[in-house]
Image 1: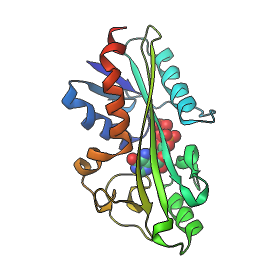
Image 2: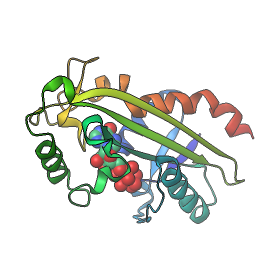
Image 3: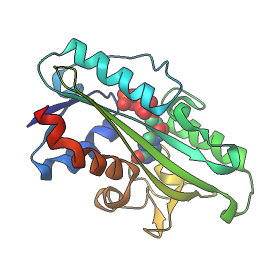
Image 4: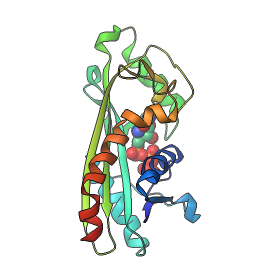
Amino acid sequence: KKIILATNNAGKLKEFKALLAPKGIEVLGLSDLDQHIEIAETGTTFAENALIKARTIADLMQTYPVISDDSGLMVSPLNDEPGIYSARYAGDHDDAANIEKLLGKLGQLPFEERKARFHATIAAVKPNGQELVVSGEVEGYITFEVRGIGGFGYDPIFFSPELGKTFGEASAEEKNLISHRRRAIDAFLAQFDAWWAA
Ligand code: ITT
């Protein structure tokens, strides 16, 4: 089974490939199709933006089912900022600048008050228009400094109590066991057969 992942984010693509290959689902990124398509994320929620991305690519490529991932980091003491703006918090897809801005805003706030959660919404659209939207979240704390070089985005400052380390310090396999993306994909897989057949 082949599906297209409507993303320009190499970190996401790698995780989707690893998480869906064991289920017999081959994930093709836009980069695998030699495409780079910028889509304006004009929605006000993860679900709206995920649907915008999946529908745009589904309209362009009528051959394969398309899925998308809209995700972000919600930091409790910052009223869930940066949320849907996570990729463009300080600079557009500038992970280092985004991290610096976030750490600056939290200052020396005590560790136990630095609660945060990652969210991922997956939207799936088939050529016949059948749609599916599912989500997943994982909880953690924002560290005081960068720890580790694994993953992407905010991973080096997201401490997972379940792993006892940051997502930046975790291996890809460890992160994929518990991540928001893993949980969204589990929800997707629970409805996959019905969606695929519909
Ligand atoms: P596409 O829209 O092309 O898929 P994007 O990076 O622009 O890529 P989003 O708009 O969904 O995607 O923004 C998600 C951002 O949230 C991402 O760029 C990271 O900054 C952050 N993020 C999401 N999942 C993450 C993860 O697993 N680890 C670290 N940061 C993550």
